[in-house]
Length: 184
Image (cartoon, rainbow, N blue to C red; front, side, top):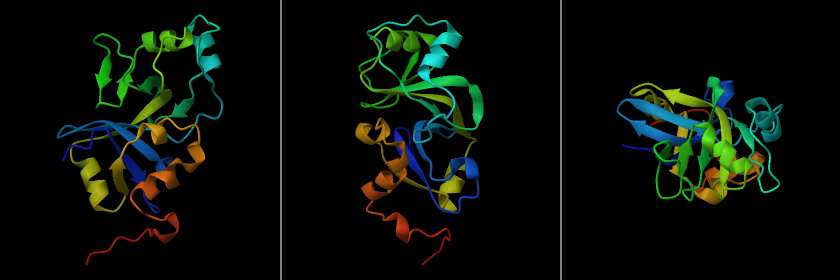
């Protein structure tokens, strides 16, 4: 099972408050583990303007704003840009699938600031990581649902509705979810 390019939807009662109502885009998943970015939790106290200033990135009137998100509990000071595939840094972009790429180098932030970046993007500080078999175990314990990742959902500015909208792609009404797992 390879879940790269899929969304994880946190189930109620997961037990980890950092992931409550989270939608996580999986950038990579293999026998070695998994790495993903939370795409529905904006950073409250940090903007792209703040980051440009801190990193010494020149501003341009052609630049587009990029939303800054809490990407996960690992390496908060490291940034990852999840973006459409119309941008690709040579040797620096991980092509996840036909719709998504991920770049973790300064060149993409400079390109965005100059108006040369990808059409769609979001910046995540930190990431979510799982060791070998850990994510699969969490899925089996009813911690996560999975669904296809659609760019209009992932890159939507409506962060507060992404969890419900992701569930609805599976035909699940959030009101009907239970924190209890069962076996038939």
